[in-house]
Image 1 (cartoon, one colour):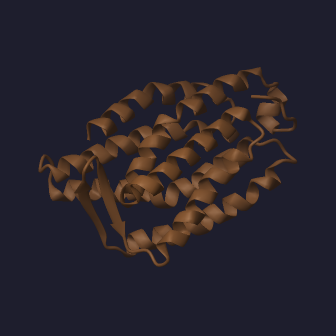
Image 2 (image 1 turned 180 degrees about the vertical axis):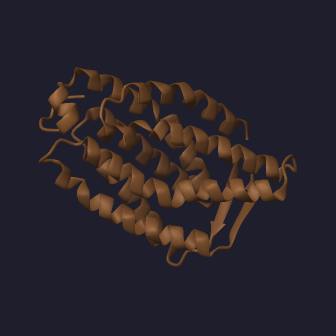
Length: 220
């Protein structure tokens, strides 16, 4: 629980830096990721409080539902879309298939979450969110591909680094503690969000026509 609170609070100034650097609507989805991760971790803190009987069962269930809706349907669609919007024209086609894949994954996971039931159980150092998934391992692989693929293929080194670090985190979690996959990976993704701030600050070097229209590629 304390890790969620610390990560969430620590990310708030990172989120402020990212949002301050936004110059065009195309940059907003990517720049908003640290804020989403921060609020996501603080939401999980409420789930932990529910497990410890500090908040009501209703509050815990609502927090768990919000947490899962962000982790399962939102992120596999938002992350590839955010990267796509940053890529220059002419290079977006290599990311576009991942947006489609992310939409498919998000649609199925949204159905699975809403169809229920959602069960939460406490394990050492993590919470496990049980959602009834058909062919769960297949959807987990597609989730990873949708989230990591666009970042690794990006033309920006800072975004590539963000993708590679999250690939490492996903791999470690899948091997060491697969039951708590959603909870632990989201903590890791939140911690790597500092690279999003790095990218947004480095975008200052790009000419206005690139940032506003995405017509040329320059290192970031």
